[in-house]
Image (tube, rainbow, N blue to C red; front, side, top):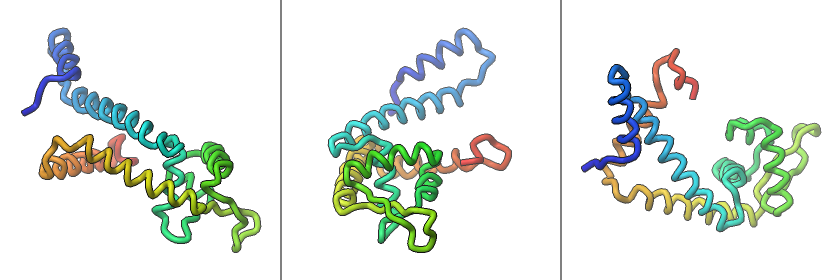
Length: 170
């Protein structure tokens, strides 16, 4: 059974002040934004226990899920994380200094480098992703499997609108 929350209060206030407005989309996005903020803050604290911020975790996780030999070009990393190459370079510098990644010349192009997980980076990201996933599951544990599946499907549908829709780019 659903309960009233802060978003309901906002929607009720708009309904009182502007009854001409259809506010369902406001309610949906309000809840998505709140959930994202709460989950993001929680995950940031979770990754901090491994000495990582979310940006550093994203780099390590991208390398880890790329498969052996767990290396990518800085450009491929940037594209995968939807970042500028400048933003990626700053992250790589921090991770290299911490001994979690290493950069080495590309064997096929002397002008480029590859970024590879170190053994320590591999171990840390494997532990962090397992703990992070466990925390995400815990945050959603009050939902049934059927509810989770439906929520996942609805969010997938919301992110796959027809061409010409502003969300269609993602």
